Length: 215
Length: 210
Ligand SMILES: [Fe+2]
Image (cartoon, rainbow over all chains, first blue to last red; front, side, top):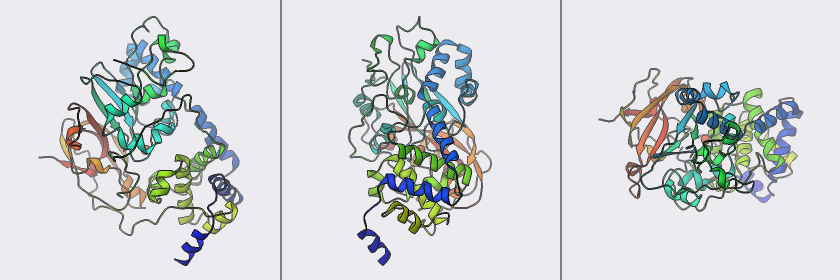
């Protein structure tokens, strides 16, 4: 108790100081090396939502690949070079005109790192984790995605080891685009299910992947 | 543990802000925190992913809610390194130049009494109920689905059972199932009748609904 009281009387170390202290203590003790840390930090930079976007674009253009992706997404993603930690068992969820899928991890913040990347701040926020399971339609509307009441929403809670990715509907007006151009229509938000794949007309460097409207 | 981390369905939270072109990390310390989390689990092997998740769950609730995700990552990691003797709190506080907040202790009796289920008991279409259990240790069945009935729509492979794994208990693997719950069965205030929530649940957490 006295130890706690004394601790409360002292000032808290900043997060920068705490991270640096932990790193120094582990390296000084020979537990890990700077090279170990660099290895994992650079892995994180390679896990990008652009990877998942390329998977979606291929599914839109190659019916055999789409079938493989729906049957065994782990293998289909690995076929394109996307595998690794938090990608050990991936399940792809295909949106249809009457069913929309959205992903959450209410208890921590899991995503399929190799295809979605590390989770963005909004996905990790207590507000998203608390609300989207209970009022998905309202949350999606606030985020700019209006779905008709006829569209059933399926919210997928990442409570175990399955890691999900959403295959959004291919936008109308994108029929003539090739695979690379189609991948540019798919944002991280679309892969999680809080946005649609953006039609080519509203794509600009300023609004890519922020909001997609469907009335 | 019925802790602050189990947020699904909690009311009172506000708007969700999406940042355009969000970088992987906003600050260098976040990158280091992530790398420390990975290196301790994969190279040092001081603890496993289930112990790590539970250490974050044991954080002070106010600290948990107010801090950045990568501060939770660091706090969970360092709490375990101190508890297991890899680091001393005095040393990291001296190096940091101030108080280093850590997670609270593990419960004396963290586990629910669940029968191991090495063989898959459930099939597609089965109606199941999540056991109404509230262990004070690690569990991955969110509160909002406990005691509720749903339908098995997918059987996943066997995965390490998180409850015992987080508490140095028996190493066992069980299938998980994607169980679909009608949203209106989970919350009476729902407007959309045809929406659903799918939760990925270990075999031990479930029983047949009659
Ligand atoms: Fe998670």
